[in-house]
Amino acid sequence: MRIGKFLRIALALALTGGMGDDVAQAEATVGLTVDAGVPDGTNVAVVLRPIRPLRLHAGLGYNGIARGYRVGATLVPFASWCSPTLSLDVGRYTDGDANPLLRMASGDQTLDTAVLDRVGYRYANAHVGLEFGRKRATFYIHGGVSRVTGRVHEVLASTDMSASTLSVTFTEDPTVTITAVSARVGLIVYFN
Image (tube, rainbow, N blue to C red; front, side, top):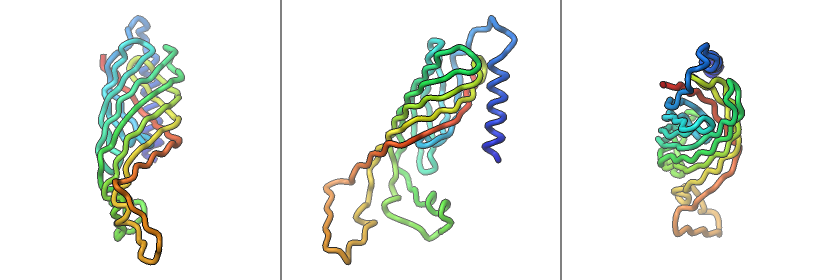
């Protein structure tokens, strides 16, 4: 219910902000964005629009486990209240304990696994999307593909091989890379 209400308010702000009466007013170039998605988590970023079709952003985020950052660029080819977009982003989340998130999602407060004690990752997004609004506020929906890379710590501590003749040895923590579908929704408010 909260997300639905947020989306309705954001879309209303974007539509009214993008269709102002002052046609001669230049587009704002500095703003602030708030968005949420996967694998991005929740982010707050400064937005710069150095030229009309290009938007740059850099900010901080939280994914429910640890803090991180994201930087990126978005191409907005049309100067209208509704436009398609192409976005490229890179980000990173530092290692954090994912066990509390596992316990919350499962409802089992006794769950604890060593492999989730240190979860962090780097990611890169390539998204297409739609945005609504232009001058003072923009609501956007992006979707595409992400490449997520992270290390799996404490693999042997989480594996019970006592009944097996199999022996596995790691000289360092293994790196895992996943390519998956990703998405985010957000709102930009411009200041000048």
